[in-house]
Amino acid sequence: MVKQYNLAYLLVRLSIGVSMFGHGLVRLPKLSVFVEHIVGSFKNSILPEVLTIPFAYSIPVVEFVIGVMLIVGLFTKQALVIGCVLMITLVFGSTMIENWGIIDSQLIHTLIFSGLLVTINYNYLALDNKLNNLSKI
Image (cartoon, rainbow, N blue to C red; front, side):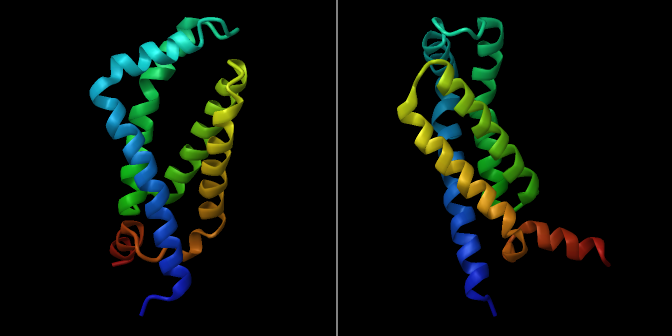
């Protein structure tokens, strides 16, 4: 029987996973347009283009992978840590271009990632558990 805490964890994990998956999914087909937008946003910042270009290319890929991992519950802990690190870098970037309006969303994502990390013991409905059970055989 699935306990309510496990179900609640699953629902939040799926919600943030779908959010990340969707961010990556819609950006990947138009990656060059996304990168041009990001690089353009940072042209007057102190960050050099040599850093912004590779990071801009990596954002949709990382978002997509985090999303997939969280949706299926595979390497959940690692996905949550990577998600927090991504959000920290995005908050830093947002401050560099003084885009204060987006930081709220990034901090909310960070809170959800860290909340799931703290309560990971409730991650019952996940492939992680199936793999752990197989490794005990």
